[in-house]
Length: 353
Image (cartoon, rainbow, N blue to C red):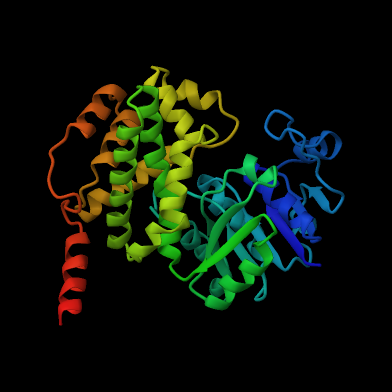
């Protein structure tokens, strides 16, 4: 039996707590306040968000970090990207050279434009950076809580760390693969939320499946272009953290980012939509970061640019979607500063030689 700390009582946090408890591990679930911890201990998770979910006795709910982190072998951080730095800073003093650190967040930090593994590395002892890994993939919490089969990928720069996390996270209904491309896995999990916002707009406008499929495909290509510019392996975006997550998040009504896009298309103001939600739609902040990165790199990202205009410049979703669907046509792998053409030309030359 392992002792595992889970920081935060988000939907994904409670889901991961249930999975770990189901494996027989001792779980410490950390709540931000004693009021929240007390409510969870007495009443359990919100039945509207977690129907028929009862936390087992092996899950200890606490608001005290000392108690949550006491002698744990692993810590999982399923927190919003906007609070990752604060959370890892608070627990950094409890992290040791053997503590496995798993980021389960799918976002980028506003201001620094950094991935979550970079944020974590800046806040812990540099000697422990090899213990950092990231979890991503097409993982809708409500389905996993119903024990429906799902798969994910865990990535780390250290292969042994990734394998250690794989052993911890894999369950009978939750299959976890490993990957060494931590950049690509993190970017895929974060950037797909931008595409989900657009897919929600397309659905809200009644554009149909053909248009949404085209939008998703173009979005995945755009994600891959930015990923390559930042050092990711392009093949990662054809895997679970790329294509897999794009399909799930763009197609499912359980997706928060898809929901935001749909509501924007119906004419609701963004502030009103966000006020009505109990959890974070990561695509909102990620769009700002991706737009900043594209400008810094001189990279053409038309989907990100249009979603940014809708979110932050009050552009009409219908007008923005129309421009995207009726935009200039050319080779589908071309774009300003994209390296996709050079990649395939290089491979073709090698195969011919």
